[in-house]
Amino acid sequence: MATTVNTPTSPDKAGSMRREKLQDTISGYIFIFPALFFFTIFTVFPILYGAFLALFKINLTTIDNRTFVGLDNFPKVWESEDFQTALFNTARFSFFVVILQTILALLLAVAVNQKIRGRTFFRTAFFFPSISSSVVISIIFLWVFNKYGILNYVLSLIGINGPVWVDDPKTALPSIMGLNIWTTAGTFMVIYLAALQDIPAQLYEAASVDGATPIQKFLRITVPLLTPTTFFVVTLGIIGTFQVFDQAFVISAGSGGPEKSTLTIVFFIYQQAFKERNGMGVAAAGAVILFVIIFSLTLIQRRFFKTEQNY
Amino acid sequence: MAVSAKIPASSTTIVNESSPWMRRVVKIVAYAFLIGFALLQFIPFIWALSASFKNAAEIQTSLSFPPKFIPDSPTLQNYIDIFTIVPFGTWYINSFIVGITTTVLTLFFSATSGYAFARIPFPGRDIIFWMIIGTMAIPGVITIVPTYILLRTLGLTDSLQGLIIPFMVTSFGIFLMKQFFVSIPAELEEAARVDGAGRIRTFVQIVLPLARPALSALTIFTFMGRWNDFLMPLIIIGKSELFTLPLGMSSFRGQYKTDWNLLMSGSILVMIPIVIIYIAFQRFFIQGISTTGMK
Image (cartoon, rainbow over all chains, first blue to last red; front, side, top):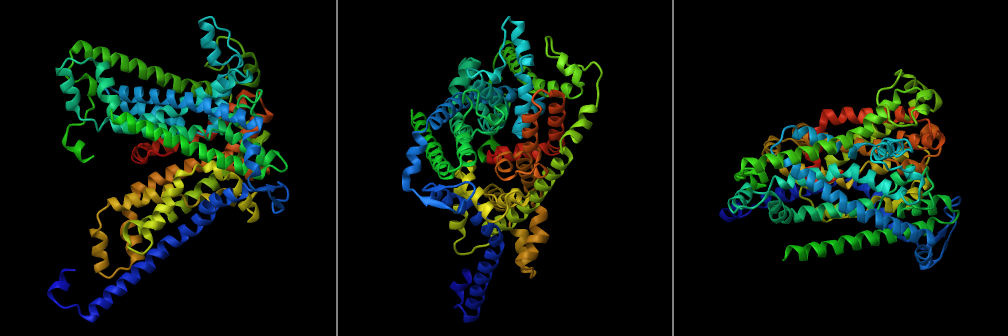
């Protein structure tokens, strides 16, 4: 650029710059083309195609044979008793899991962040469940939740006669909540831990000089300063829990039972699509509704945290 | 980040400047809490490991209190039986084929496009990049129906290709690589380019070797994701010889509900590669999680 000020731009120079620009454009597109090609087909297209399919009645065996039904699939979803059950179950699941896993993750992070021995060990151990197969974890927990499993043994020590957790409609969903919290608390702990290390130590020192107790410091310094991280953790939590499926499928042996107590929204979509003869379109409509639910919750949540920050 | 580099990191947080007595109390509470949670995390795994070495008779009689963690007569029989009762070996191979192939392809697509998004100026670049990132906000399960129909139209249902091709290019991979390439200094590449090396040569000889940490993190995340995936195999795979491990284990659990010894040995076998990779690469995990907050 500086050269153009001193010397008049020679046509030669401008030409070489133009050539370089063209070369960049060509090589840029060569570099992104392979990725963009497959991304468009397998990620972008299905998103649009899904919204389109929600307008049809589709037969599972002859998928090309479809009838346009307009928006009829949408009331079919929300008026369906199964969907209402699934929505209620999923909302309950999300509510308890997000709150408990967030609190647990924060407390674990604060504890690990104290100057204690074995930090790396704890961090490694707590993170491990979230990289294990959800199917395998669910099978292991079936063994834990068994009539004579380790959980009921612990309860028997305090005189409680535990049920077969996953066979009782009252305890099946809470069991899956428990295993979910057990799995994800460690992941979110790692996120909190990274944020904790950015809080300046002086803040705590100043508070100590003023005679603040550890609990006061936690509530007045740590929690408020971690608000952005909490927003992030809660958002990921909502998105994750509203998609819960694997655990419910394995625990209920693919039925969503007992008495539909473990039927979740994704489970409903799966059943409509692959267990009903003409349910593909209804399932696609259910997916659109699930997207709207997750999206709105994220927005509401964001607003809630914004006002919290402006106190 | 820049701020915290100047200020001493607050690893001592709450205990700083407090009285020694208070400091000790805080520490004891922290330890008790962490050890308690660590036990809670380990016991299910140990309990599963112990069951995997018990013989069938002991499993049936062990349905009483108190639970026994040490098997009476430890046996490896379950680990042999699971390969004969179900095609567990085939599932294992399928999982490896899917995991490794997808990972290699993901590395290729993410590195090439991530590099272009970070370094090569071309018209439309930012719009395309933000379009790709925008899809991250859309939960994956929402597209199960259209993806199933698409794969069926392409003849990819009931094939391992169907478990690989849709996952070759991910917005997460592109994002991770782009962020990394932006963070490394451009001088080395510029020097090579002044010497007359073309874009592709610079990329292969200079940039890729530097990208090893990011490529390692992406390798682990991609492999884990495919290894553990359940929903996609469930909807597109019907033949048992094409099952991957999670789908195989789920169908096995449906048939052999109370053969806990076999179920637990299968579970342990599914976890072994993950444990090995985790221990070998755990620093990349923590880095990846902390910087992107993604699984």
